[in-house]
Image (cartoon, rainbow, N blue to C red; front, top):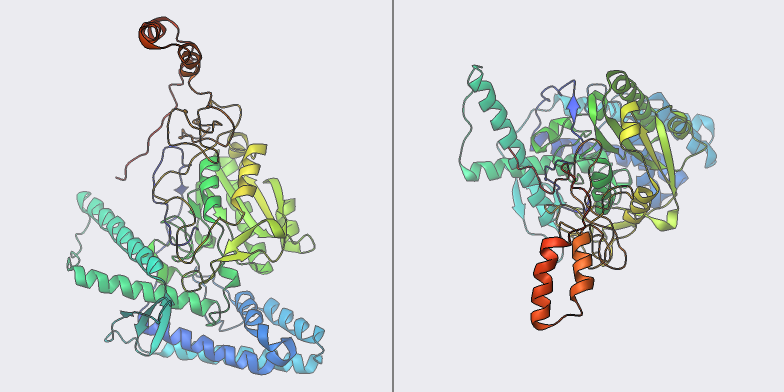
Length: 531
């Protein structure tokens, strides 16, 4: 996502999302529980450093700990646990092999893995047995000069920029409004009427800040409690979301959090924290029958393999049912790993792109508290396109779409801390449609604000998607757009004329010289208002 921006538009060009299963209500959480989880994972990190830091390198031990955590966790109930009560066998084998490659004897490596696993189980049981303390409320404090805000519960503090805190509050309000609308709809159908919530603005703000604290604390705990970590929480550039939405109708992420999401609805690893902020539950419990999604998972091979298996099941079901289903998957270029080979060899994979390390990057996983927002890529990246049978014919990857995608992955110009890197997400991103479609106009980079194509830079513009219709913008080029043939011809005829001759010729041209093409009755240049 582009920093703290949210894209909350509803446009007619979006591919509709239809699901066959709704995530069940998640178990409740509270600031006290999230503070306890954060403290516990930091204790586990201390144990990991004690037995592994000398062998793996003290300066980067936190990165090894975060990798082990993600590989060790299992979330069969749809919620990824902060502490792995029983670490996955693959994670234990991977850590043991890593220690042995660093020169540690196998017996010592096995003992280290056993000690870490035992400590994780002990801390997990302790957190589960702890009582919830709701007497203390979350407060928001100003940080030191130039530092983010502090969300405080008791003695636990987490950092969050003002822009991201406002984003979380917006998500909370939108989610509450959507839930209220659902309840009203149930009451209209005769369902049991539930007690109305408090309308006190102060109480609502307190609840929003509590939800914000839970989300920020959980994200920090998932990355091992270390602010320097977060490599598995990095987000794609905001321009990429704009390009994918314009070209493929993507409006939802399969792996995101309230802090790095671009759209108000997303799948996440912490449904208990994120449900009140727009979270739709775990992607592995999500069953879309149609829609277009971006999948940028944590770069952990077992997780990528599991994701690929789930994608195959969804796409196979959509193909049988005739559904429009598309996934754009972003993972490292790992041709030697089975998880990458599984993606490459899938019968639903229709295209694969490779982005060179020096030509792209991501937003930091800790973008809500770090001053440096852009993170250059540390490896080549693969972008896979997986289509259902119907989607393959309707929205394939073309050469022009590929160019826009590669451009969108580059570093935004003049990126500053906690400022928008692109146009406000409330404004529709300019759209450059493919060559066979009707053209309109655009400015020298992405397209002018003129909806009918008289941009200063020319290029492509409005056109209809095969799953719907959409608005155009225009991709850079020289001269005027080609969407208004009458305007071009009139300009050529009338520019040399002056005075009365100009007026007479202009009236004559209006009456008799229109030479535009056939009218596209399906071309729509509007947005659908929220219901």
